[in-house]
Each structure stands twice: as C-alpha cells, then as structure tokens.
Length: 171
Image 1 (cartoon, one colour):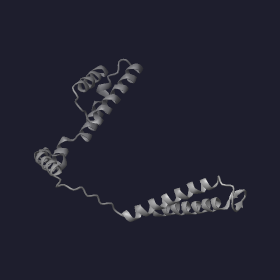
Image 2: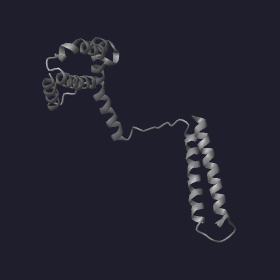
Image 3: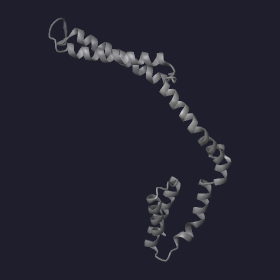
C-alpha cells in the first residue's frame, strides 16, 4: 500500500493535480503507520485495521454534500462569479487606461498614526543629537559629559517611557 500511495502522489504531482492538504497528510500518515506496523508484525493488514477510521475522517473532512449546499462552495456561485469577472476586469482596465479610475485609501485613525510617528521621529532626533553632542567637550559638564547631552538623554528616556506606556495602555 505504501508504494501505491507514493506512486499515486508522484503521478498527481507530475500532472500538477492539487490535492487537499488533508488528503496528502492522511496518505503520509497511513504510509508511516504501515511502515512501522509491518516492521513490528509482517503479517498485519494495516489497511483493514485503519479502513473504518480513514472512511470516517474522510467523510467528516470532505463532505461534498455540505460543501455544495453552502453558497460559497456552490458550483453555481463560482460559475456566476467567473461569468462576471472578465467584463469587470475589462471595464477596470479601460478606466485605468483612460485615467478615469482613482485609487482611494481610507486609513482609520490617521491622526493617531501620525502623532505616534511624529513622537518616534522626535525621540530618534533627540537620541541622535544627544549622541553627537557627547563628542563635544565644552560648556557645562555633568559627570564629565556635556550637560546638554545628558538633558537630551533624559528627555529621550521620558518620551520613550511615555510612548511605551501609551502603547501598553492602549492594548
């Protein structure tokens, strides 16, 4: 049986037949079970032992009646969708070529996104400018570091803490 499943899967792959993942997983599982079982007991008929279980699982996972009764799984639904798709695409391409189609994006809470991005840019600028001023050895010093750089790091730390707290609080 192991060889038959392997040949079937190879044949389907050669002809670009796409199988449901459940079927491929089940075939591989059956193949492994058969291999281990025949190693332990060469006289065992694995297929006879697992046939009722396989049938039950296959009926449960691949219930054709249920998928056909479901509107999204209905062949009529897909047929109608495929009928209307080419004219819709043709119309869209003509509008794009004529410049009649406009693309519109709507982003919810754009002000919230912009304010967070602005805060990130300010924090990054403060961090970089404070790091640059660390190389200057003039002006008021605090712990052998320029006072302006230390203040920049403190403000950066406070703004970063506020940003993290807002992020955690908003979740």
